Length: 348
Image 1: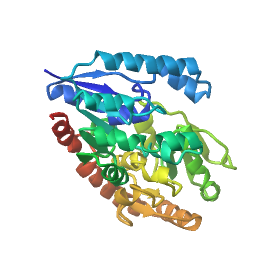
Image 2: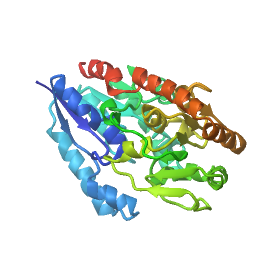
Image 3: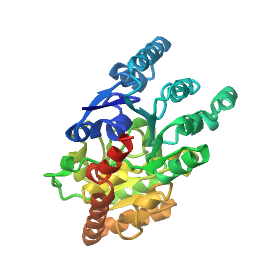
């Protein structure tokens, strides 16, 4: 049995690791692989991070454990690295693997190179601005979540580049129905991305005053109103059910280099639930949203309000656009649609 070693950034509790790595493991095992996973950051680290209380000692222990796990692997191991081995340190680990003739695949679903080349700290920019380019260049293959990340890998001189979007396990989206007849505008995300919702707070307030329900899953904050606004705790087991209670899914973004690296996973989740979407025309959103077919791309508050009001007043349009979006997901954004490509990369 062929063994794959995953060096993930997080445990399953970390969204990026869960979606880019963990959800593939059962399918890889069915295909005849044995999967061993070494997360860098533990559940306790994530809990500390969410509370803003991560100690340096905790980080040091996590890095020490990763170094120990690296020393244990054999030259025959098939290695997949999420993003980088040691954040905010030089690419020594990846370079040593390359020098030893140990091929590795590196996977990106965010523009983490901007953590370094656009960092506000001059020393980090000076010493680490080219770090991710080095990681990409020394890899056997770069898996990029979208074309913006692919273009960076090309500039870095990566030997092989494959685009695999962040996808869903379609089985998790079966058997649900909307539980109410109210018009619901929904967003799902994390506390760190709630800032984007704040950018369109005025639009959401006006719609809420006119009877729309606003559901925010996974974050809490002050949007300047409370009427018809509902904050819902995120869990992995309830997220799909919560999305099915939306009538339209939204994904506002700022237009900046970091956001261009995002893989539009929210939109893919919404469309998997048969929902139309409204999103900012930034990065991969431009590839996922087909204007006036499965949703709308909007770039100012007036167009945000117009698109959402159009869906509010037209259930037939919501249904038509939702069905089109669901078809797009089936074609391109499921594990089944990307698994063969991933296995082809692993079989180096």
